Length: 205
Image (cartoon, rainbow, N blue to C red; front, side):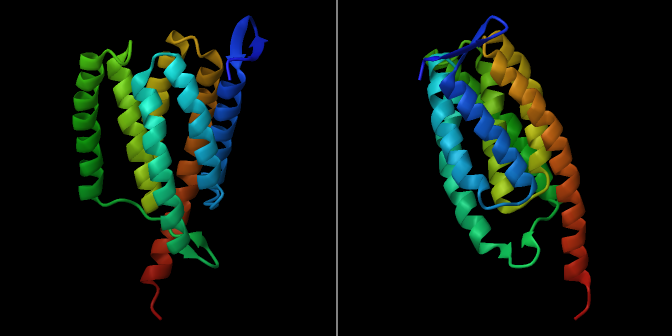
């Protein structure tokens, strides 16, 4: 897993390269509401666990394990909520759901950062914790079909790019930048689909 190649003087392991490329594919698949989103995600998190554990980013490594568990849930949930004509049914979150997400992000970040500090599991516990919590929330909301998961991903990307650069994971930082572009496109597409779904529900029989 430590073997790899060099780009502009920077070493990129095959695990990092493959894991991040698969992560990009996951965003592309999620934008299209494809069930392949979830098995591809499982491959990605397995590889990236090795990468982040080697970089002494305990929070980011631990999130891969949690993502794997949420991925299994999302896979199951999407198979149950899939419309045979229109694909996975998506919707916008309610005000209460949005406030709950904000509260969970804040409280979860503080709590996990303190755990990382106490256990010396990360050299950057606060951004590491924020990425961990944000990722867990994003995948949970995605599994529920809530449009807001794309916005959570934007926050994760904004925190993740500088952290990856400081960790020497330059390829991963570049991938996070591409993520941001795909996330914005996904946000637009899912919003459009959520409006169509709401219109179909509201339409009288």
